[in-house]
Amino acid sequence: MEFFKSANIDFLGKKWYFIAFSLIFSVAGVLSMVFWHGIPLDIDFRGGTQVSVKFSHAPDVNAVHQTMDRIGYHNARIRTLGGAGSNDLLIDLPQQESSAQALDQGKQQIINALRTNAPADKQDINNSSSLALSAYLLQTDPLHLSTDAQKQYAAIAQKIADYRDKTKGGVLSSFGDLKGLVDPTVVTALQQGFYLSDFGVYNVAIVGPQVGAQLRKQAMLATAYSLAGMLVYLAFRFELIYGVAAVITVFHDTLITVGAFSLTDKPISLTVIAAILTLIGYSNNDTIVVFDRIRENLKLMRREKLADIVNRSINQTLSRTILTAGLTFLTVLALFLFGGEVLHGFSLALVIGILIGTYSSIAIAAPILVAYQDWRQNRSKPVVALAGKGKGR
Image (cartoon, rainbow, N blue to C red; front, top):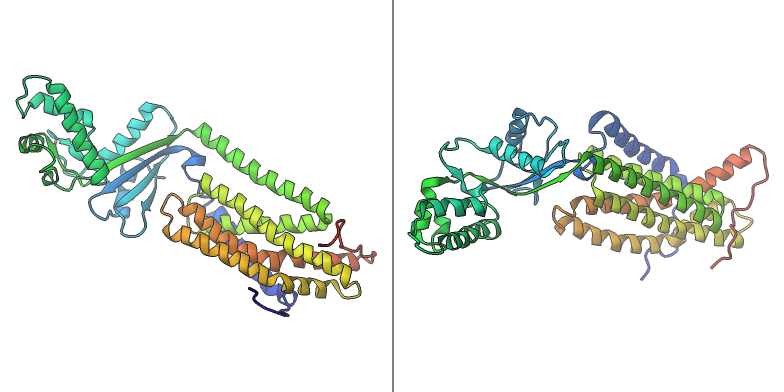
């Protein structure tokens, strides 16, 4: 299957449009990173406490923000899990400690802040552990058990907690949900000592500041090493200018991708860094295909201008580029749409990266070679053939 047979598009003739497009998005991303949202780092890199909360109704994110401000967490990041209409929120809190005590403290602060009109003499069944439920049942003894009461009430409490967390998603909407699950006298006893809040905290994670700083350093080193390795490989495989052009292109792709995350205020996590490294390899592979065809055509079309050779090479590889990039794009688009919140950042980076990486292989990398030749000619030096060191395919 082949698209664009005998294509003859003047890509280099449109280079100023490409430059304008790249400048607009690059500058917008840089301005956002410097003046607006900065580089929005996820908890992996900045450290902190991450609390997952499920509500019995669609939560008001603005109201939750105000609640966090009221208890002193002015920089809390609040995100909806599962897309629009979801009842789950992910609350990121700044944290300076990484102990188990800090973990419990962050969770309890969230619970206390979100509680409204809570009875002072009752516990919250949606945020009580099975141990708390078991202790209350053992104390009140609604079943009047004479032997083995502790074991039996522990089993009942665990059954209630599992039903709440696994079947009801962490939130009981009414005590009626427990009817048919446990003895009615147990439900009646629970109603006397517990009340129903409209939310439940079902997961808490913490990352210390030192770990976050170490992960930031490792992420930057991984990106820098990949760019350096690419430069060395292309300088050996082709010529130094090819490596420089590829590195500039990948830097362009990375800048626009990170800028897009900043503009949309999407946090950059470890999975996003993995996507960016994947993007570097993908964009580099596409660029090498174009460069290899340019090198082949330089040997066959020695009398023609480099600009014409580059244009023809891009047109000859255009069908392959569209097929490869198109199929990959459809795959990551499906991942973005249906992959869920955990893979949202990863898939978003790939969606942006594949579009920009494919575009830059055509509109950025190859024109750099022509610009280099023009610069050499303007200096009135002999133009060294860019045919490279290897043999053509």
